[in-house]
Picture 1: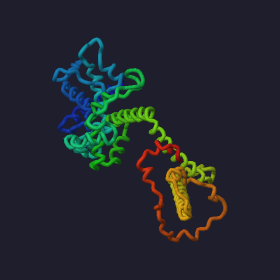
Picture 2: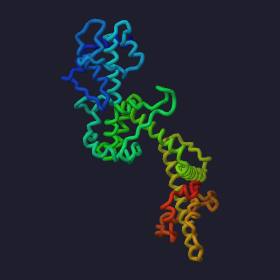
Picture 3: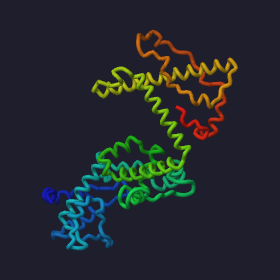
Picture 4: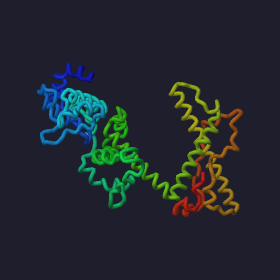
Amino acid sequence: MLLYGQIGRDRAVMFDLADNDKLKFTATSEDSRVLDALAHAQRHQAARGDYITAFNEEGKEVDISFATQNWRKAVVDKTRTGQFVRKHFEAMVFTALAEELRTGDVAVVGSEEYADWSEQLLAWEVVQETLGAYLVEVGLAEQGEYVHIDALFGEPGKHVIDFDLIESQFRHLMRVAVSVREGTISSSTLLKRLRSGSRKNATYAAFREVGRVIRTVQLLRHLSDAPLRRRVTAATNKVESFNRFSQWIGFGNRGVIADNDPIEQEKAMKFNALLTNADDLRNALDIAEIVRQLLEEGWEMDPEDLAHISPYLTEHINRFGEYSTHELGLQPEAYDPKLDVDFTPLREQDLTAAGLGQAA
């Protein structure tokens, strides 16, 4: 191993720094495999032979599943059952420790750069008090029971959800989720921590698996629930209609932002969104005024008919020519958003069940 040539020269220094009197490491999640392996290496620091035992003080085999397959092949000698190749084991442990310090899975007590961000989380005992209700609230459990689904797609071990990882990190994940909801740790702090080598971060990996569970459940609901499919289609149609309207408004240069400055790009996008929403509001006000006039003339307004009306109208908008700006400083009159139409039936029933799922 070429890497051990470098680590070997600094071996004494690295063991000295890893001593609790110098630096005290702590795991920021439920995963302490690297620190357990480090403790095993420290116990055999004085060894000079080529091999050390693969079993800890309790007689259990040291877990090196955190390492890559290549590392495990180098550390385990098939001809020496129950032993590790010492030099390779030490190189693997210190390499993994450096990586976990970078990703935030391991922290240094008293350090600012490598501080333990998990200290901001609620204690597990506190989380347990509201955990059941929280899981029901976010759709991860039904009332009174926890829901678990087996892997439904792919071959065993391939393209399936890693429930073992979720189970091993469950308490930590729930501490993170409930702490964010209760405000003891900000989502920005969490995202900042997870951005650092996220794919190798234990918290990131576990949340990724939970995300796969949620997506799988939602996919199954989508396949089996026709009203849900109509509701999703209706929401998608609304978003697409807004996007088309926004593109129609931002017709300059065929909608292409030619400036490479990210600040100018953001300005162009925000100005277009502002103008789009302003036109959207103007259309909604005009539609409401027309409805009021029809009501005054004695027409009856069916709320289901109104539900089909889209505010993304363009026929009456002139995108070309000169625009007057002298009224920009005038404050408009207050508008009344209330219509004398009973929308209660629409609120009380599922819009999709009434056949309105395709409304834009």
